[in-house]
Length: 226
Ligand code: E4P
Image (cartoon, rainbow, N blue to C red; front, top):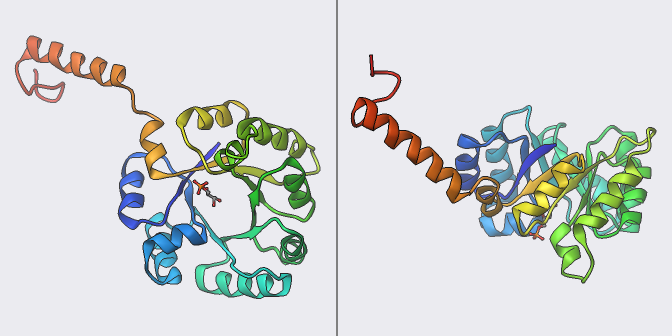
């Protein structure tokens, strides 16, 4: 399962990249608004930090298919052909996805709340379908179960679309995605820490150091205990 950062804060992205095995960065217009800078400037900087091989996802703003298509072309020109263009999964978006996918543009179908939206996005040629797990929970439904149903629908051999699950409120939801073979998750910096935070782990690691220092002396390691 691919692991992406759902943020546009340069410092937070750099900090996560230092420690975690990450496959790319996703943004949306609200995330870019928080950065309070020109969107192309921020996205260009993210691209230079993550490198050409990593995934970068950025969203169109237009609501009409023709405008979405034009916007996607301009975004690709400025951000590179490997950029995934996020398109809202509304009827105009499905129209744009069909045109853009036939041109070979990489597409992430976004704003997905229902399995039928994911199915339609797949039929329209999207590379990823991005369900909003936590936002589905907030509608009184089960975001994890909805996403699993989407995965079951997309498991069809003829379908190349993968799930890119988004909008998480805790690490358990992410674990559920891992266990179900979801294609990718995008996680906020706050949730990243929770993927591995565990006081028992810290206690175990501290005890190993303490016991070794009892044996060999303070500050000693396997580098210098000969
Ligand atoms: C990603 O595609 C979504 O835009 C994003 O993850 C939504 O997350 P939120 O519900 O935490 O805002």
